[in-house]
Image 1: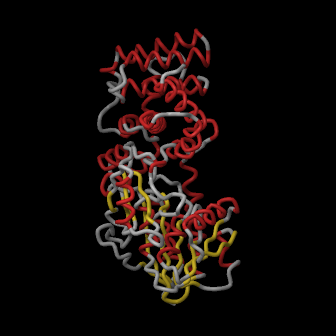
Image 2: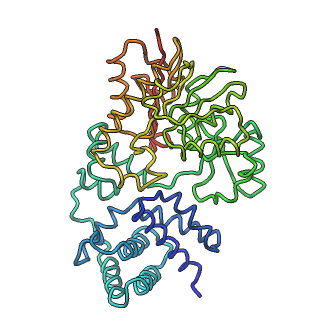
Image 3: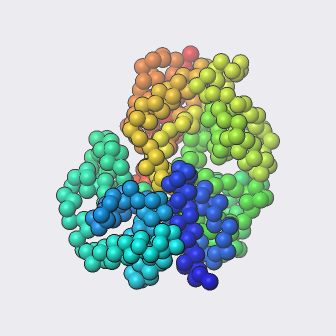
Length: 444
């Protein structure tokens, strides 16, 4: 019978293969795979550490592995290259796992998957890494884009983009923060339980939470907190939502009884936040996907919120679908997601430079539709979870150049607002996901 640690590595390998073969999100894949196995709590933590570590450090790991493989790692079978990545990650970044154990487990996995010959190959590669550990990165020239890209395991094109925006030192610090496990953040459903009351309930379960610095309903727990131990999920006491993700709804400044439009609402974190903030008002939740819109319904039902209505429609054409106007509109636009790499590390490998222009064009179309649906003196908040200027500042600048009926107004969070009047959060500065927020008002 396999030891618990061996089982944890097998689960990690299964998740990594799902992420690579099916382009699945690591978090969702972990949530689906872990319950299928009888793992102890510490072994669940090991699985998460291995998966997030290997996905996040993929470029760096492959750089090391390619020094000792006769063939490029990318040409190996998915199973074999992920076995090698798992072994390499343990050797480089997990001091508590003995080197012999990391090698032995990788060899056993390779033997099971690919036979004795490949087991010998894995053994040779990993032992070469141990022997040459002090010289693995000696060919990288310090202070270069290539060095940051490989050492911090981010695609070179993205490092170049961020370096052009903020400089190399800023980019290196940002990339390093993206590689760190972030706290587990939730939003307490204050329609059912108070924040202090929820913290007391969590403490009774042996969990130490803390209030969010910026969001009144936010609570954060250490990164390795087991989700299953959080109290009150079935009762609708909370929803998992990042701290930065709570800020756009707060910036809207919704007044009691107002009708609010959430143009891109799935999976429902912000829509249900708006509904909970204003129980006497209504939220119109829209999404282009029926399946994703159903996620909003499910979240609202679990949280006990009945002041939402649902519209399946393309947000870029929503002004042709809805006849009414709104005093408050949220546009949490589809984006590259490159501000939430710490939560979804696979994003940096899935996104390509060609995606950015297409997304920026779509974001602008949605913004125009939103402005057309806005009442005079109404407020629209535009937000993204990315850190690329082409999807953020430039989209707003283009909108303002094309229309005379909207202006940028103060979002009301001076700690996070920059000189242009936009909110921009950074993992390495604020300890939050990378978000951009612009608050607009219709003047005609």
